[in-house]
Image (cartoon, rainbow, N blue to C red; front, side, top):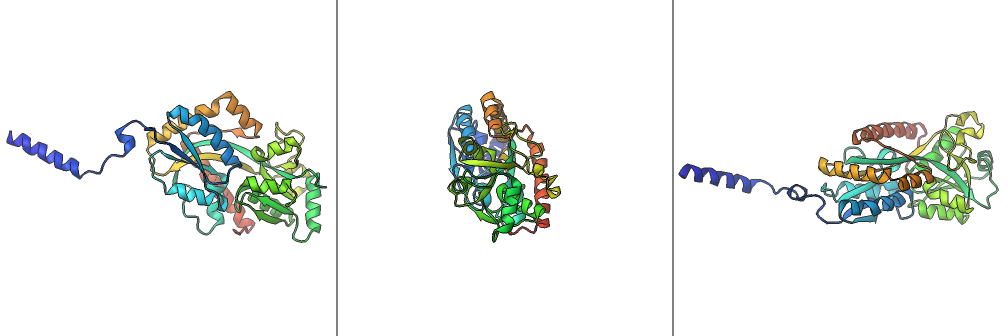
Amino acid sequence: MQRRTLIHTALASLAAGLPALPAFAQSSWPTGKAITYLVPFPAGGTTDVLGRLIGQKLGPALGTSVVIDNKGGAGGSVGSEIASRAAPDGYTMLGGTISSHAINVSLYPKIGYDPQKSFAPVTLIGTNPVVLVVNQASPYKTLKDVLEASKTKSGGLSSASAGTGTSQHLTLELLSYKSGVKFTHVPYKGSGPAIQDVIGGQVDMMFDTTVVAGPHIQSGKLRAIAVSSAKRLASMPDVPTVAESGLPALKDFEVLSWQAIFVPAGTPAPVIDRLHTEIRKILAQPEMQDKLKGFGMEPADMTTAQIAAFQKAEVEKWAQVIKAANIKAE
């Protein structure tokens, strides 16, 4: 009996010295606590639109609610840094992009997080090209018109973007680098306010994703000049590619933006697996597939390991572009 008592006492002492198990290990996840879906851009942009569409369906699938939290700034870096410091407990998700998780690390001297080491990938939502748009009253109807006009204007034509380092900005810089034509970059804190100033005529033009620009093109508020994909889009068959401009320097021009979902590094594998599975189910629904294609997005279906490899390649690709074009953060 004494020996048995000593063993029980020793086990009790050992248990008392161990740290408490996290909530997700003590009970099923989620527990009913709301999940924050952090969008590192203002409302109205591509990442925000997709986050809200997914969040509306993900909450019921998990038996809880998903709350969208917009934290814009520095091309997605501000919100991404906030997310990187969140507890890895399954209650924080981040809408990551080509900007926040591939470009910014080479563009900014210090962004406060590592796009690969600070996060774990959950889902690659899809890829899509950006489209060059101008106001409906603009005299420019082709890419050649835009390039010629920018050559003759002091400082070049003005071009808005969702922020320094975003895919909109880098596409502009790549066009400038390859064509030798200068433009004036006008960064905003998100696509929403940027594209409104193009519609209003305060800025000459803008590269933006088809998610954001598409509805304004359809309504007649904006005119589409060219898309950055290698082939024309099925949703915009009459809009030529940048490569179709006829300029030899642009014959291989291609930029694909992408949207993904990440969680803070250290989030338990079962939580990541559950999120991956549920979000893939949502994205596979016919209505979601139709919406993605309507946005000009190409749906993606990758494992988390494949997403990590894809992201690594993108980080390396844009590091080379930024260095070659000598692009500096403003």
